[in-house]
Image (cartoon, rainbow, N blue to C red; front, top):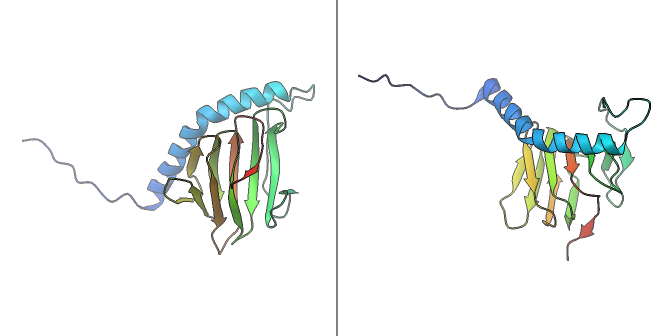
Length: 166
């Protein structure tokens, strides 16, 4: 007689850790491509192209142009000329209006929860360890859920641009 296996609901710390690991693995190809391209673009004699470390501190960062409650830290690459990686922070409750970018975007949640909308798709709750990716020119908008600031990582494959949606 074949053995039957009882399955347990996927909840708890183990499931969250597995989800975070899967999100990181899903992002690995984009990060590898981005890191290689960024390293080539940012090669310096100081060796900065080999190791990049960012310790996130609330209140530290460059204000996002045209969006109160948003700051970012450029991690790698030059968003004016090619692939780039950045860490964004949105104050709790901050909304961002519908817009699009030429580049596909790859997003990983770090903390808080961003309620992220991509036109033609359901709303996604992007929290710690979650991964969201969409094509270039996809109209998207959202809000940092009330209660806690939101921190998320973004990798853009192409130079960064910003276009308000009509």
